[in-house]
Amino acid sequence: MQFIDISQNANGWNWNFGDGSISVEKNPKHTYSEAGNYAVVLTVINEKGSNSKTLNVIVQGEPVQENILPVADFDANTTSGSAPLSVQFTDLSQNVNEWSWSFGDGANSPEQNPTHNYSSAGNYNVNLTVNNENGSSSKTLNIIVQGEPVQENILPVADFDADTTSGSAPLSVQFTDLSQNANEWKWDFGDGANSTEQNPMHNYSTAGTYNVNLTVSNENETASKIDTINVLEESSSSDSSDSDDSSDSSSEGHSHKSGSSSGGSGAGGSPEPAKNVQVKEISQIFISSGKDVTFDFAKNATCVESITFRSTKTVGKTTTIVEELKNKSSLVSKLPEGIVYKSFNTWVGNGGYGTSQSIENASVNFKVNTSWVNENSINKSSILLNKYDDKNKEWVELPVNLTSEDDRFLHFTANVPGYSSFAITGTKGEPNAIAAKPAQIATSSTVASNTTTIANTSTIASKIAEENKKAPGFGIISGIVCLFCIFLYRMKKR
Image (cartoon, rainbow, N blue to C red; front, side, top):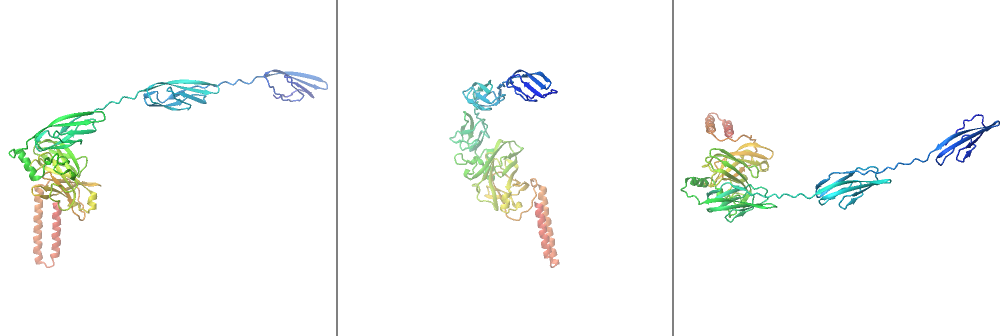
């Protein structure tokens, strides 16, 4: 403490600080080491006398420091759930420098924000105790861990359909799986044959009543369904309707009904050996008399995109199979002329149904990879669809129309007299720019137009020949005119 003298006329000073200490300085400093009330007396003097003054000084003790206690608090991201349950704890405590967690299952942690995993069901009291130099504090939270949920056993349901359930032997049947929750299939066709395919086709070669049993399974259970297929004796030639079908089959193509179920014709019951089938695709639709029908092959597994025709009779739910082949079909004697792009078979229904005796306005829509065209220098305008005439053992060229093209494929359509074995061909040459246009069926007017064009061309050629006789040196010009007329005819024909 600093004392300041403000006395007058003094030349001597005598300080008594009240705690036993004194000083003769004019402006002394003094330190009080203990609390208390002290009477400080200043006596001043000069040659004429002395004078005193007293001042009371109060010295307080050191301030008492307040004890700051910890406050425990925390939160959890979840307080209930199925085992195993992982819980993230977040500390919200105040004035803390130590943490002690007890998770209620015998486990502990000194971390501030621990994560704990409860592996089994139960009610767990989680306790957090926090500390500092002045004390401790605790908080408890209840965690409810439920048992693992009981997984419901999803059972399979067996169901299937057949495109036909009766018919004359040999009878080819397409089975379609309609089961639910199944991942394995086992078919017993009732004639000793079996299959593990999901949607098999089976050929019954002899008459009889066959109980078809489909057994489906998954990891939980199995289920079965049985249906009956009635195969009648092979029709005699006296049956007019069956005789017509048989005639169709022999005159315009093989019937895919003729394959043997035990003869390795796994290409869907067709007469083509399974080992020669690269890939196949199946399409089903209901066929009514006089109605246009289209079988779409949406998987794009083969070069055939769809087939379209009008049926002359009602045959009900019908299956069409397209087989893209590895090599030449075993049903044809040779390949057609030109460079072969793809060979394929198309089978519609049973018993030679897909022939001109049963259908009309038939067409095939197919695609050709542009890479094949470019790699083989194929003239686009030379691409043809060839149909095999089984009766005459020869290929028939069918003109095609380019309907569209994209970066990968040229898309064509061709009118066909029926369905059996086909081959797509082309020839090398300068690529001609041909425009995509809708498919057209030849009419009497177009035939007449072409006939007129031919007649006109012949007339022009005759006149030119007469002029050649009259005008020497005119031969070159007449030759050019003839070539031009032929070019116009060909353009007209296209």
